[in-house]
Image (cartoon, rainbow, N blue to C red; front, side, top):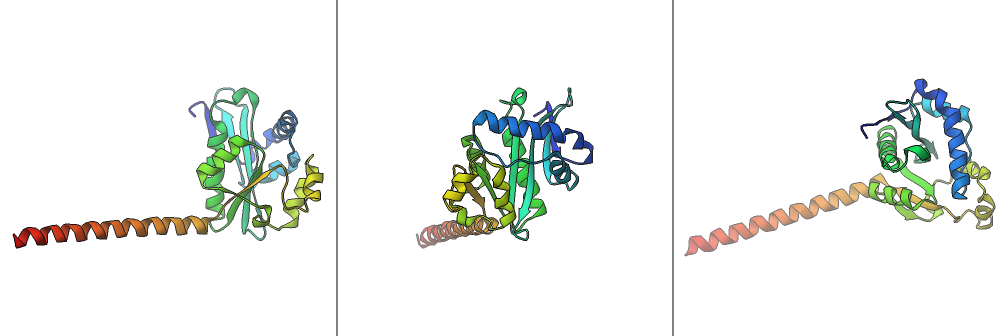
Length: 212
């Protein structure tokens, strides 16, 4: 990523907000899938709050990619939303790097929150899986009404309503830090057991050697 600066967005990036919103809309149109619309003012707000990741081309100073984070349900849930990479900057692996930065930012700002996302992109699903997310039913996501109201501007909102908000064309994915801790401790426990068994084997070996 030597050609790009990928960093937490700030006040110095608000001039890119309109361009980012336009690309979000064009990207959704090109894919023929839905995306919750966001205004330039909203994107500016996320930037000023330090809740967005932006990629800037070092030479041209053009915005190359973007993603922002939102907290829901009294900060119990956090979503990484609005991921875009501008067409001319694709095939550089930017989407993965931006998602990784957004994941790090989310964990830093909301260490105890569950991270989730809705996507129709197989590429995003793959990146999420590598970060520790797994597919879940919508019932495992936030029940914050404000989050689901954001889907009203999506072209697939009628499908979501007809399905009684249980599923849609998007796939829900979730990262639970508590589950990851359990996995980590389980793994460490197994390592400890293996080490103990190894020590026992070594003691038995030495014991047998001494008897001889």
